Amino acid sequence: LRRGSYKCVCRKGFYYPNTSSSQKYFNGSVLEEEYEKLMLGRNSSYNVNQEYECLPCAEGCESCEDDSPCIAALNWPMRTTILVLACTVIGLLPPATWFTFRYQQVKASTMFTYF
Image (cartoon, rainbow, N blue to C red; front, side, top):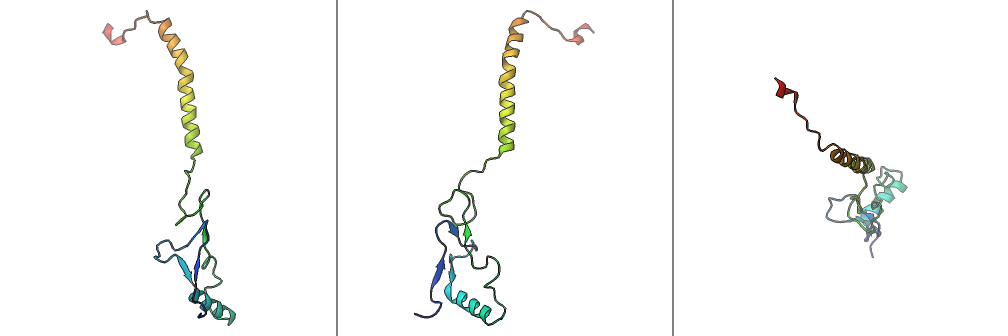
């Protein structure tokens, strides 16, 4: 077996950072080459932050292909606004109903009928 002749595949719960790549693994030969450069004190991308790291899946995902959420994100401000509006309408219906039945005999006419 030749040095670096392996593929580093992301574990379950993580995904390969380059989502547009057709190969979803890190090439072992490249990893070994970059590590050797690092050990010899040459420029290497081995230590670059997250260069050779799989990224964690979004919350609630067992496995994933990218950072897309697996569960719906809750929009609390919008949900709260809708709840308040619904409660307001429900709260105003009984008084409106009472007012309608209480004053159903009163007829109104516009002020334009007098001109």
